[in-house]
Amino acid sequence: MQVKHVLRTGREDGETLDDLAVLHPGKAGLTIDDGTDLERQLAAIWEDLLHVTPIGVHDNFFDLGGHSLMAVQLLSRLKREIGIDLSLEVVYSGELTIAEMAKAIELREFAGADTDEYAAILAEVESLSDEEVRALLEAEEQPDQSG
Image 1: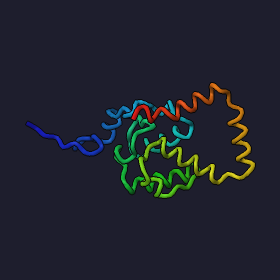
Image 2: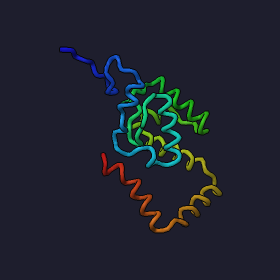
Image 3: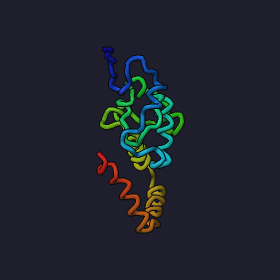
Image 4: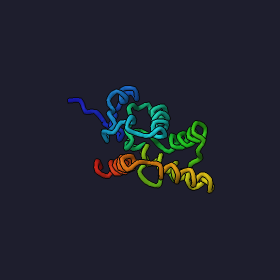
């Protein structure tokens, strides 16, 4: 009987990352198509770094084969391609998923906003219909229901 060693990523010894890309379905069932523009940008970077596709919005970077050096590469790519400078603290502060990274980026952008930007954000929020607000709230609550 042949015994195969399965790595933490779910990949067996000898499998290539391309083999894993074919097998990985996005564990949470939410594809990146269900995400925001920012989440889709992040997923494209993750897929390029990790050689895994598709990546779900709630898949963990480290569970997909990421490691500390790759995390530094990820932060470098974020700065270069999106223009956001995140610290390593974000990487190691909790669950590193596309959804959580997008939230960290959005929070950072809000923290750096000036009064005029806050006014524009407030105007945008106030212009939402009740249906749009409900849909956004349901989208925010969805990870808690699936996890």
